[in-house]
Every structure is written in structure tokens, then in C-alpha cells.
Length: 154
Image (cartoon, rainbow, N blue to C red; front, side):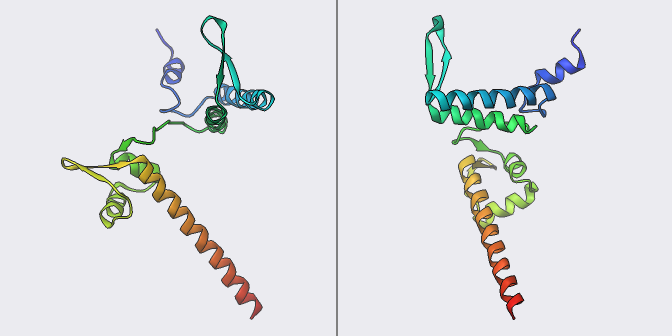
């Protein structure tokens, strides 16, 4: 009979936070891979029949970034760029309610496709909205700082 802890670990990091052992392992692996890439200009692993396989630097950096998230104790989900999300999945990614997301969709802030009676959002459109929102927030903070300095001078 499997233990409860074994069942939790079998679920994977898309459904649960990493254990302390996984956090430590990811941190060590990220460091080792980064060092190997610095030395070799890429990442080399053993493939079939022991033949060396070189992993492109861009892929190696992606692996390091993934391991970094795990090392920080985060749950991780890989989502290909063309993925279509449900409104609930998109709302969860933005950390907003589904009704609020629906208002954003209907207002035209985020492009979506109607599939039957359901709305689907492309992951790249959701990331575009999130980046634009972050840029607007940054601009607002800069403006607030400027106004504060102007107020202090008067």
C-alpha cells in the first residue's frame, strides 16, 4: 500500500508545491547546469549509446529558469505559447475573479475566441495584457514619484 506522502509526490509540481528535497535538488541542479553552460558554451548530456548530445544555450537557460522557480518553492506549469485557456484558467493566472476577467474580455482589453458558448483566451494574449498592465503600473509609479518630488520642492 502506498503512503500518503508517496501519493502527494507522485502528483508532480503542476499540482503541488515542491518538497524541501526537491527545492534543494533544483537549486543544486540549476547551479551545476549554469556552471556547465559557462564552461562549454552549452549543455552536454549523454544520449543514446552514451553519445554526447549538446543542448542549445537557449534551451539550457530555459531549464535553469524552470529549476530556479522550483528552487524558490513555486509550483510550475509549462504552457506552450499557442495554448488556449478557459476563462477560469486565465482568471487564475491573472489572480482575478472569472467575472472580472469576463469584463476585460468584453471591454476588448484581452482578445479571445468564442468556441460555441465558451470563451477561450490564447496564452500569448493573456501575457501581452499582463505585460501592458505592468508597464502602465510602472509608468504610474514613476509619475507619482515625479509629482512627489515636485511637491517637496514647493
